[in-house]
Length: 281
Image (tube, rainbow, N blue to C red; front, top):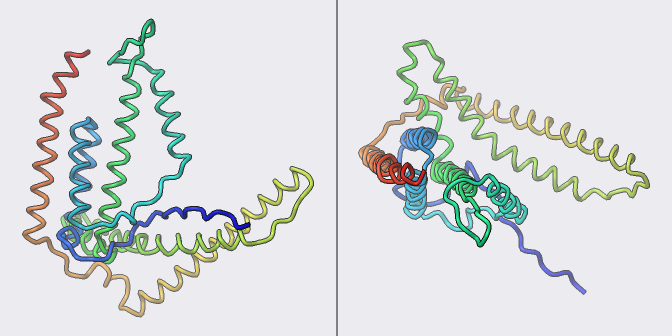
């Protein structure tokens, strides 16, 4: 009797652009970084429903224009839904307005609404970061950072070194994730010895963790050595940030659209929604 096939979960795919060509793919990497920085500042100071909804609309529209397939989205594990449920349940106990009347019990939904708002904010920011990751080549990040940081060179800030460090980190991250997955799969294939006592099982677990950390450090050092040899063969680290990188007309249009949408959402949050919340309180 064969066991039923379990549905394989889709892993998180980041720092790897989705194949294809679109308007979002053709945007300058610096424009995407500026958009992320502007939206981050907006949601930091005004994390209301209107800015969150506006950024969500921008993310969904960008995904449609970039033709990001549904398979790029990771599978959501069941335990995350359980955590969200218990988080919302405990946040409801905080009370607050609005208050609904359930017979002889008054239930305040303010804590639940705050929890939902923070959850939506987290999802929108994760989607924004994923959009940049899915539509931007890692090799374009360092020249864009060097171009954006050019005014700081007057202050003798090592902008090129920072750009190279960021590029190296972004390049190494996917490779290390693949190596960690291979090491974890190899560890799971090892036969497990049945130990009689809990102390022995705990000691074996600690030994396996130490072995896995040692193997991880070894793999990271080997990858770093290979990457250093590749950079040296291609002319050194200075070539990474020396590539020509300039915005085009479409970048100005895209940035203007983002500013208009975010500005309209901010105005709506400060006027209509702000006055309604004040009256409700």
